[in-house]
Image (cartoon, rainbow, N blue to C red; front, top):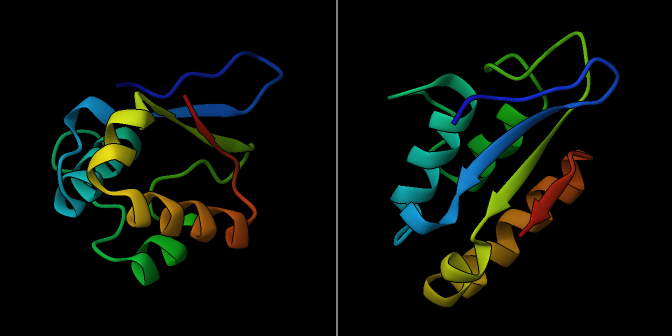
Amino acid sequence: MTPRADADGPVILRIDGRKIKSIKDFYREIGFAVNGPGGYFGRNLDALADCLRGGFGTPEDRPYEFVWEHSAQSRRRLPSFVDSVRSVFEEAGVTLTLK
């Protein structure tokens, strides 16, 4: 999915939880959300934290946030991982909305 932003709001990066059946799938989907097909945005929680701090495709000149759509499907498959990802986002100060 392509990032979306209105003129005054943050860039919204969307993760499709329907496609996440494994941890590897999560990193593929978040990489796609930020940097397009085959895009990188971490391969483990430490790398994800580094990426959230900037310089890996997120906007440098305006705020951004993530929306994890269909997150309940991901949570059923990877409950503790979803909680860990939420913690990384929280520590980085980046909004992650689970829908």
